Amino acid sequence: MFRSLFTACLLSVALATGAASADAVKVGDLTIEAAFAHATPPRAPVAGGYMVITNTGSEPDRLIGGSAAFAGKIEIHEMELVNDVMKMREIEGGLVIPAGGSVTLEPGGYHVMFMKLAERLQDGETRKATLVFERAGEVELNFAVRKMGHGKGHSGHGHDHKKHDHGS
Image (cartoon, rainbow, N blue to C red):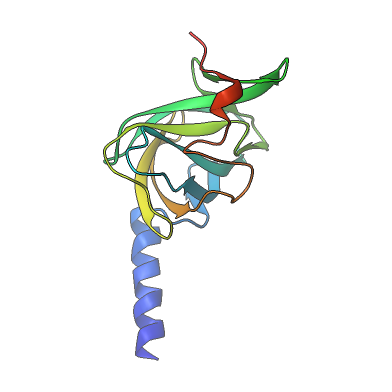
């Protein structure tokens, strides 16, 4: 009984202060769900972050950046297959979250790129990052770290370096 009450109190405090979990987090008209990052091998320079962002508002919003203590930089990227080569590029101006719609960030598609990793991300951990939206502002979010093989991903950020172009 005490443990359940303690857990409920912690959850209430987290929701009241806007702290995020790997579950659904609401900020303004946006709901962010199922946030996770791939575990990385030792000395990996990057990792991918994934989630589903739903906008229930009447105006579009835009994911424009973020920060994390474990990464020197966060960029918003997209990947696409062009002539049998996976191409990845930063989305200039950010990722639009349409009014009344949702966007899935997943391995092989849109994703948050944690760059200049300061340390390894290990399976089973939870890592905190702050995402920045044009309209909704900042939201602190916990990313559940999962081993490779979950979803379409691989070595650090969801694609094969043998057929890959990071762009200019």
